[in-house]
Structures are given as C-alpha cells and as structure tokens.
Image (cartoon, rainbow, N blue to C red):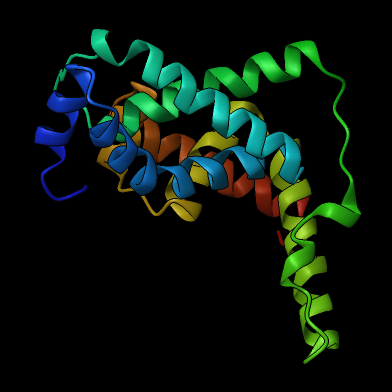
Amino acid sequence: MLDGEENLIQRAVKGRPSAFGQLYDHYQPMIYRFVFVKVGRREEAEDLTHQVFLSAWQNIRSYEHLGFPFSSWLYQIARNQVIDHYRTRKITVDIESVEADLVSPSDAEMLTERKIEREVVERAIRTLKPEYQDIILLRFVEDMSIKEVSLSLQKTEGAVKLMQYRAVKELKKVLSLE
C-alpha cells in the first residue's frame, strides 16, 4: 500500500490528475507484470495496461472504498481487459519479443538459459485455467497475501488456498515436475 493512499484516492476521485498520476506511478509496474504474463507480448501488455489505467481514470469518480485495497479494483479492471482482449483477438506469442531487453552480451549463456526457463514457465502458466493463472500471478509474481488475493478475486481465503494448491499442482504437472 502506498503511503497516504487514501488521501490520494480521495483527491483522484475529486478529479485531481496529479493524485491519480501518483497512484499510476505506484501501481503501473504491478499491473503491467500481471497483464504481461497473461498475454505474453510486450506491446499488447503495454496497450492493455494503458487501457486499464484509462478505464480507471474514467471511472475513478464512481470508486468507493468498500474495505478492499485500491489495487484490487485495478486488478479487476486488468482481468476484464485481458478477458476482452482474448475475446476479440487471436492469441499469438512472439517468442523473440519476450523479455528481449534482459539479454546482454555479458553472460549470454546464463541469461539465455534463464530466459528459456522463464518462457517455459510463462507458457505453462498460460495453459492453466484463467482463475489458476490469476492465483499464480497474484500470489507468486505480485507477492500478494492470501487475504489480498481473496479480496482481489472476491473469493474466500479458504477458496483461494484451495485454488492455489490446485493451481500449483496443475502447473507442476504441466512442467512435468510431478
């Protein structure tokens, strides 16, 4: 949570762009990572992340704090954007563009191996049911607590724990680790 977040949210709800800009600066990297792992292409993830924050800005005046973190609201918007994206577009993955800027000439072999492992895991995650993808991404990529995930996905903590167990088990099966 961002220091003074409640105040920033209240100011953003009143239409102050600078307050929303601070929220954007804080949450954009998290939302981008979430979307990127779901779609696998940098350009699409950037576009969808932009759409998430555009939608958030357009609807911020109707935002009400209902006990859920502000990030939960953003993740819900992001999940909906990804769902809409897949409804309207054919799924394609350009392996060349996935995290290409991480490869440097300094230790190319190690970085290439790491990139391949990452791509394998990302592809494996994409084969899971969407709700399992969400659990894996929110728990292990975004490092959210069970409680935060339950609020974001509007599920009980027990349901999140069970889904996490099943998601990890399924991911291990897809990666042939079980």
